[in-house]
Length: 286
View 1 (cartoon, one colour):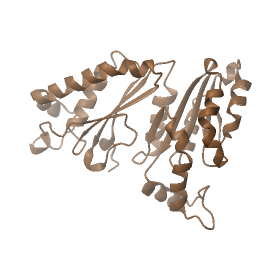
View 2 (cartoon, rainbow, N blue to C red):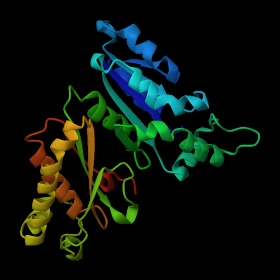
View 3 (cartoon, rainbow, N blue to C red):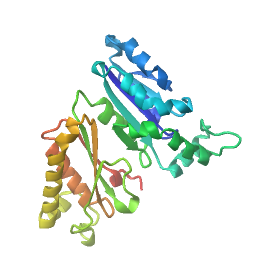
View 4 (cartoon, rainbow, N blue to C red):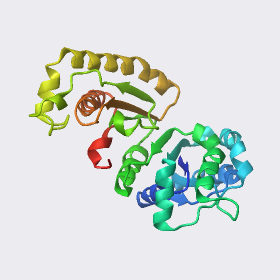
């Protein structure tokens, strides 16, 4: 049995994520009480039609339920299922904007609790399950379509015990991805941005690839990052980690980080079947 738990703050995209999994054949349950997780696993045991189940767990649970989430998960018969906990989040500013746009009521707001206060309280309430997440996705800069793509590729597309690896390029001037497991800073490398003839291209274009491949520092950085990941990735797999996000950052997220993310993705995809490359700043979100 495959069990996926989707959690996160209200407005971060949980419903969209659950709908994707439902469309892909998962049996989905919205807002399942934490205490019912063991019963769900036992009820679905041996049911072929219920071999893939996804549930959302959010702030509508009783507050004390999250204090016991770790104990509840350890009560489950782990030999009978593969568990993935996916936690979605976004910046408070973006969450405020999303609620303002949809005019929906936050589950924690009340006569004495403003929307901003509810969003902050929810983060504290969900902290225990956030700490248990196998995969954390920051949806601040994601469109609904990109979130659906991420869930489809990284969660639904994952099979067996294969670790899912994401190489993500980004620009430091737009902030560091909060869902990264490792962050590599490549701002010290030669920058093609300062050549007016190269500025309009990205790290996926041959003009930038040719420029960077002729720089010894770039090749040395690529080799060092490759060696580091190669050295430590097996220990993540031995520790039963399901997901690993490796962020590569330059100043604007257009050239050096994009090039290195592409190179690393191509290299590790030769050995690991679940490798994805994402370029945050090339998606037009900033």
